[in-house]
Amino acid sequence: MIDDEIRLALPAAPDFARLARLTAAGLANRVDFTYDEVEDLRIAVGEACLVLIGPEGRSGTIDLVFRITTDGLEVEATGRFEADGSVDHPSDLSVHILDAVVDEHEVLASGRTVRLRKRRARR
Amino acid sequence: MGLDDTERERLRERFKEYGRTGDRAIRDQLIEAHLRLAEHLARRFSNRGVALDDLIQVAALGLVKAVERFDPERGLEFSTFATPTIVGELKRHFRDKGWAVRVPRRVQELHVEINTLVGELTQRLGRSPTIAELARLAGTSEEDVLEAMEAAQAYRSASIDAPTGTGDEDSRGLAAQLGDEDVNLFDAENRMLIADLLTALPKREQLMLRLRFYDGMTQSQIADRLGISQMHVSRLLAKSLAMLRERVEATER
Image 1 (cartoon, each protein chain N blue to C red):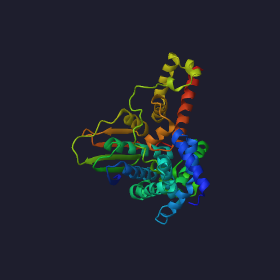
Image 2: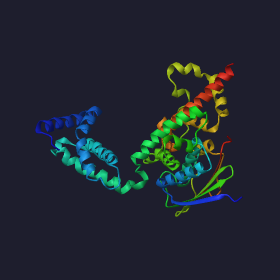
Image 3: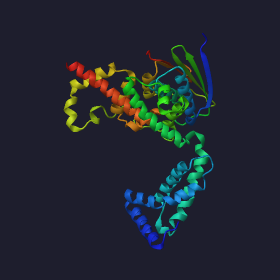
Image 4: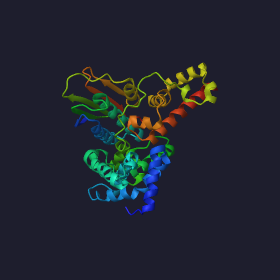
């Protein structure tokens, strides 16, 4: 089965991270996440955006790809920025937050892509 | 705004007193005395797709700023001074905030209601509820519930990404967060026990305890940082502490 895929491109500004979170929440609901799991994913997607664009935002876009898998959701957020230079290493706090709310997360070598994976708890 | 001369004189004196003392109680009185001005100006901006209640709040914010900045010694009437400040605040609301921050009252109210329902349902079901269950109980759609959850973020969006001031790892450990009489409970042995038990907790619970007690953040700072409601933070913290307590008691048996 081919996983469903949803793509979203947003200006790389903190205000628009809300849309990314809202989309994530909508999809999480589609795959029957509980309230707590939806909150976890919202936190994770917000954090991924923060890691990429920082608190002030950058000029450019964030491309988000959401994949609905059989057991949950995958999110890939990629920053496409006008200025050169890679993104800062995620702070310890960001890593702790992501650890706490998703099953898997990684920052790809380029430093401009954050990948998240969250599975639905077995019920 | 229909104040008579004696009232006007009395307020002028209050402004001078506030200027001298910075007393918040006086400030609050001055704000209340001029709320009608804020309301009056807010009405001029109604019928533009923003609820009047919301506009009055924005105008009130402008009023607060005006009260804080007003200098009675300059001989200007307060209403003359405050009107441009309040109107400026209202205009800025329309210009900057746009849709990103304007959370309709209906959604704000639903946000509060959902928070209460989550607590009740979690208790009743013994697990986190689904969005569908929440929607059914609130008598609304699942989309509305999701929007209301995101509203926690939206009406604080000025502060969500502000530095929390707890970035570096130096400062206060668990013990510093406790009152004096508790210090003895946290001798080295107990602290090691807690540290062991902490790492055995699920990661979400570990994070909550870390942010609250190790980084020393308040519940509302945690809520801002994570973009979730303070009630959700409070619920997660309570759960984390309960799990920790359970494990401490288990080791004592």
